[in-house]
Image 1: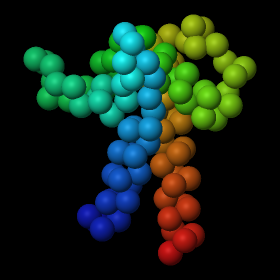
Image 2 (image 1 turned 135 degrees about the vertical axis):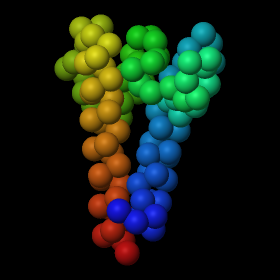
Image 3 (image 1 turned 30 degrees about the vertical axis):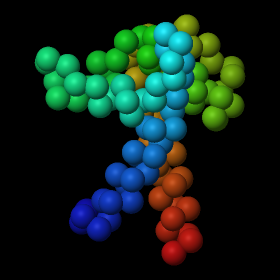
Length: 104
């Protein structure tokens, strides 16, 4: 994949991560903010580094977006939430890229 081909993918991921928002301790936070928060161990977090509360917040946002109301977030382990969130993000990226390609 060339830089030219990669740019729309990166833009799409950034857009999606910025749109996944939930309320935490009275303030709205986005998944992009959570993943860019630096720590002593890492320069950036990955989904598995986030708290279960943050993962639940992100998943509930995605549930609303994709109307996945038959799944209870409390029933998922941290590993399951990470996998489901990744799958939904990449499904949205794939959709966005197809839409861009179709428009071009």
